[in-house]
Image 1 (cartoon, rainbow, N blue to C red):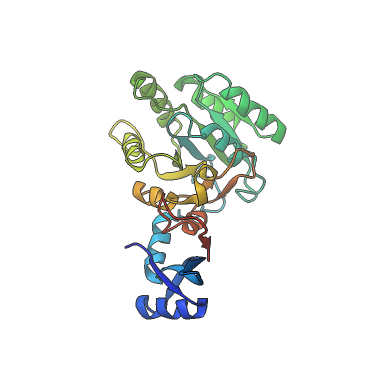
Image 2: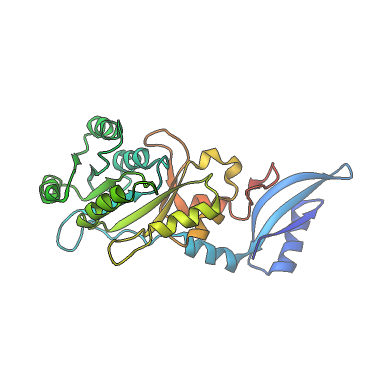
Length: 280
């Protein structure tokens, strides 16, 4: 069900119309002022509150347990996967160096992206500046040693290579390596500007199989590249995965936001939505 539009001479009148149509728990999502025959009018986009709550439940991720470690005392592990150019490495840096993002838990960084020129150096620089432990793994024989060196961390952020359909052998190798790291969460990083049909196809390629663990969350990146954030909530909902975070710029670590809250602000705005809509 898509949000409905209501128009009137003032917000009170429009809200009353929306309430009569959608029920007492109506939620106004967006507002704007338009001209109808030269007369200024208030237009709102509204939805039944129960429907909005269902959307929020689909988007929200379960809260982290406290303390943020596994039952065996090992660090909690969050991996980032996704297509080339989605922004995984920059996002990994944001997660690892954002102060107090995980409360008092101490973060660490680990990469298995040893194929892209400059990727390791970029993460190493951020880790050094933020005094975050950093490890690079080339094959499964190095997993135990790296995890021991990161054992003082409470949460480890894992960066991975981009997936290319033309490099199935390479993809198989790094996904097997990721399996050996036994991540607790795998976030599929998807650019906000990606066509929905392509996004669904990519998500299928990261679904769990008998051979590999699959994505558990979606992280919409580059939201700033989509005008007004329109269509971003629909993209996230189409992938049927919860979201903890979105990214909306290149600045590390500031351009990282809570996912469901930010996506709900764009709910109901189609990718080709008219301008001037403002979140209510």
